[in-house]
Image (cartoon, rainbow, N blue to C red; front, side, top):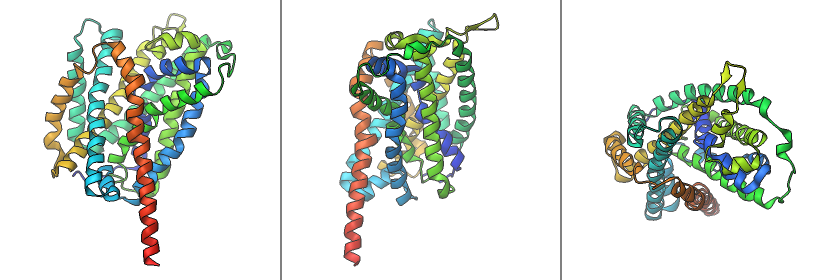
Length: 368
């Protein structure tokens, strides 16, 4: 097991890039389809609902600072139940990794390089992901710092340039369909921006060199990701309107096409494309790294790097058969993914917390 340590600021960058993930391109459409023009309220509510979940992640990690999530599962649930839960946990990571790879290949072939075979793009991204895993968590964390600043500056620049096209009337009427669609869409949004951060439990707190900075870094990274997603959804509604946003596959990319300030600032959708590639790459790295390190612990391997290349090849091959087309991907994202990630990103940590508190209570009574 790699014992490399990272700083609190690097945890912040991992939480921020992991929280944004591929949502900067995709999520506006999903949320607007449910909450219509009130999707911006969803983007405010989801981070507020997600803070207690992030607190549970922090609490569990703080009680076992020398363990990864796989070991925490076995410690709290016991050997066999913990082993089954950890196996399901690892299956989530590895199956999600090749679907993430499909997203990147599909976007590039449909929006940027339609003449390039998707397998070529998938191979290049998978090569970079495998190299990142081989270099280890310190390299991944340092890359996340650089990429977070780069993506944030580009994103804010694009949103400022798009602002003249905003129409405040696109936000009206407020709460026309009631609060229920907003709550439902908040849960869906959390599936992409909150619960997916369970990947960090394979990094935090085991790889942190300063435990006192963990809580602040974790929450700051999560809130920064929430801010980016809020701006993404708000600007999509302001510029495109709720109807167009809901019907578009990549609404943020579409709104960037609306940027046209003189001759210099036009056709700047490549900025959004770059931001999406950066954040999607980082969340893919996190899922793959969590998958290979966790699986190596389940198999009792001393060095996880032995299985990086074989698993990389499996993920690459599976990316080609992950979805038949965009409709299958949309159906999986709306029907399969939410209960899947809620089970492992919300229900499982809550169960861990409950069992921990019960066991700790019995131990204290026994001592008395």
